[in-house]
Image (cartoon, one colour):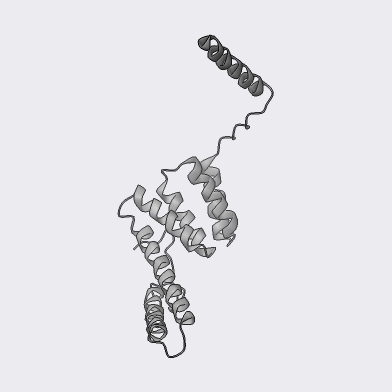
Length: 173
């Protein structure tokens, strides 16, 4: 009796699912992405300074082609410029994972982490009590990191100063 009941249950479940599928309750299929066109549009948005749109497009591209190191790199740049450092770190990390030794991605990852370290030291200094050695040490480290950022900024991108500059896809190390 138990086999008949479980067989009937399975049959009924299959019939119900088939009925749902025929009534359009399944999610619609995503249209295929024209990656070349989307990449061109993303690059144009990035060049025009529309980082939000560029990031959205690069995210769509990496969803369609998750093994595209250059798309991950460009997504990292857009996210950095949107002041989303954690997301930029993830994107640069994925680019490096896909292409070990990717010099531009390694450089930009370092720049983002430098900025994160500086922000953490500033926050530590601000949280400390006046006269506290931790506050003083945090402020000193933040100042040193700012000087490092000045050196990074002299890579031909300007006269230095925070924020340090990331490299772009066509920059050569």
